Length: 117
Length: 108
Image (cartoon, rainbow over all chains, first blue to last red):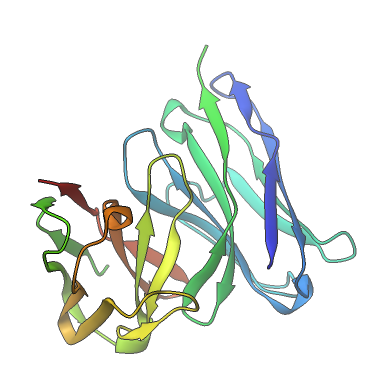
């Protein structure tokens, strides 16, 4: 079964930066588009960003556009999310997920990002 | 922007009962773009239904999806104790995903 393991979450001050990583295994990583979805404490799911299998196409939610950057290293089977100028409302569990067609086939267990002074 | 509205917000039922969850879109959407997920406390979401009515791998046949256009449903024919969770519908469009706000299914 495929595996996605997120890391890099933690406490960051407003205006600061953080880089999340997602290590993928047990599937051909470069063949799949990937996505980040977040969930604020006690709230629903919010799509954040997506990237094509080659990395040549990226997309962002309006709430993070210009502040977050998604990227991938297919040689390392790793997905990234660079988070800059973070705000309190970015506090959430961030899930790395594998996209298949028009839906999200598999989710990692998530990493918690807390933005607070 | 298409908005997905799920109802009810909370559904209280007993094991063995039938559950019907609703997801309404603000505009008509292609069935291929509609999915349902289950999320239990402290866990990541799990794909249940894709293409509005196709069960994902390993999903029991008591789960079924239906609907078209703007109205979609997730039905659980006979609730098992492990089915009490939060359920989200999701729509793909314009290279992004939109989720409903969720329906919490809890034990009566």
